[in-house]
Length: 174
Image 1 (cartoon, rainbow, N blue to C red):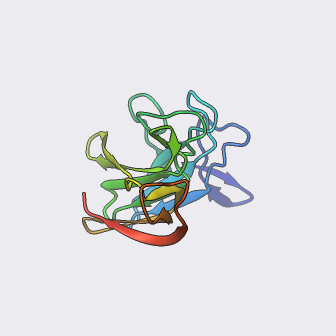
Image 2: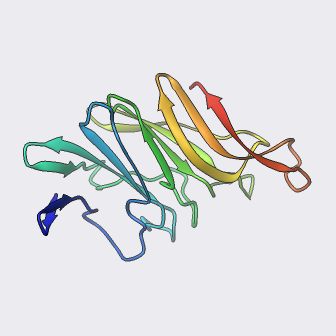
C-alpha cells in the first residue's frame, strides 16, 4: 500500500501503462479482501487481462502472490479476452468470479465467467458460459451465497449471427 498526499492507495506491483488497473473492484463483506480487475494487462498476450487480490494486514493492503505471480489470469487466455472486466467476491473472500467478455468459444467472442476458490492457495474451479446465449458481453457479476448472477448481452437462440440480442441477468449455480 502506498500513500500519496495522505491518501492510501493500492497498485499492481507489475503495473504498466494502459493496463486499466481498477476498472473493476470489489471488497468482501468482511472487509478483509479486495479484488481488482486489470482487463488490458498483458500477462503473456495483448489485453488478455489480470486480476489482483489484496488482503488486509497490519500495515494496510498486501498484494497476494499466486504461484509466484502477483495476479491470476485465465488458464485458457488468448489475445484481447479482457479477463477482469468485471469481478465479484463472496462475503467471506473465499470465492471469486471474473468476467472475460471476449473469451473465445468455438472461434466466437462469446465471453466466459471464471470462478476461483481461495483457501491456502487459489484454484480455478470452472468457467461458465451460456451456450448460444452469452454473446461477447459479460457486463456484471454478483456472487450471492452459492449462486452467481451474470448480466450481459444474450441471444435468443444458437444461431448467433441471426439472433436478436437483449440484456438480461442469468442465474448460475455451480
